[in-house]
Image 1 (tube, rainbow, N blue to C red):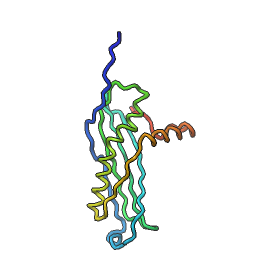
Image 2: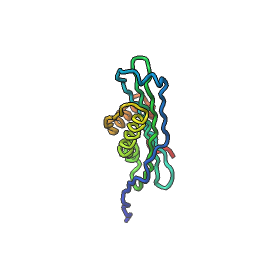
Image 3: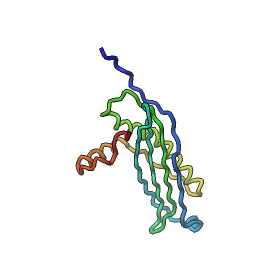
Image 4: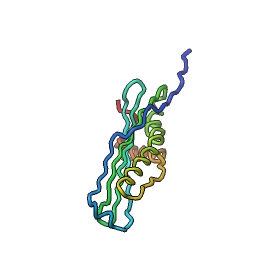
Length: 156
């Protein structure tokens, strides 16, 4: 009889892979009293490292604009290394695109708020993200348009 192996998921490391901040109109932007409109764009990428180890990178671009001026632009690549073993192939994409980003997102939110505050602006507090809904929506779009490239399983 084949022995059932225990499913295993562990967070090995959470880290900032890349971080950039642009304030192209400084110091004049600090004199503007108009509240900026905040735009958030996110992307998830994953890659197989070795022996059940995966890197998941959550990329966020936060842009603050007033009318036609960009106040600031922040780009953060917040990453995590996860040990994932004895998981069915069909479940792997779900773990990499929902569970792992749910772990990484609070760290990314804190990184963005901290860098924006240190730059002299009020903190940007990002609302929670429903990664399950985003994943299901991207799967639906990939099925509809046939691209299949929006969110995928591990790249080996």
